[in-house]
Image (cartoon, rainbow, N blue to C red; front, side, top):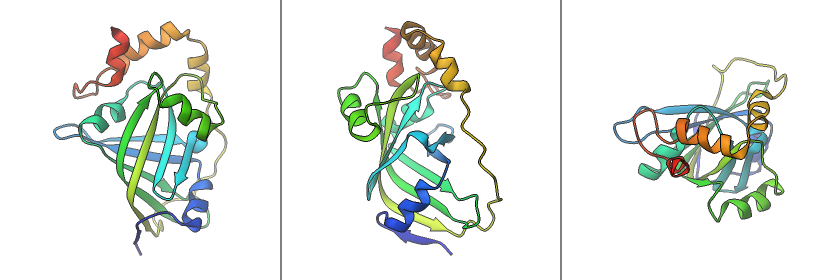
Length: 186
């Protein structure tokens, strides 16, 4: 049975901490809805109503295009082990590019000053609704390990090459909305 909360409590924090994957969902009016899976390795719960994650350069950047226009964001985590649960965080997100003045202080405060290779931005979600549901329909999966493919790819690129890639692949959404990465093309 679904339950709604206005903030996280210790039980829900423990559920989040036990997961290895989360999904982000964003959209803007007239655009496709984007849902992206992410490793929880760089996911942090900051307080009862704030979460953030360090995001690596990838083949697209829909989140960075949608959030400045619409702001709405949902993060979903699913328990794949013996204790079933689905947890959704509903709220407003923002993107803090690696070039923004707030990036380094956030990285220092919440990631011990570390970042994955190819880090491009921190995404922050301020949520006002936490919803849990049973998760009885979620299958069991066993976690094996993190993939290192994206990290190895990023480590093989110089900063200038990474900027050129982001300017080409991350500057616009599928529907043509611009992202902060468009500035790297300049």
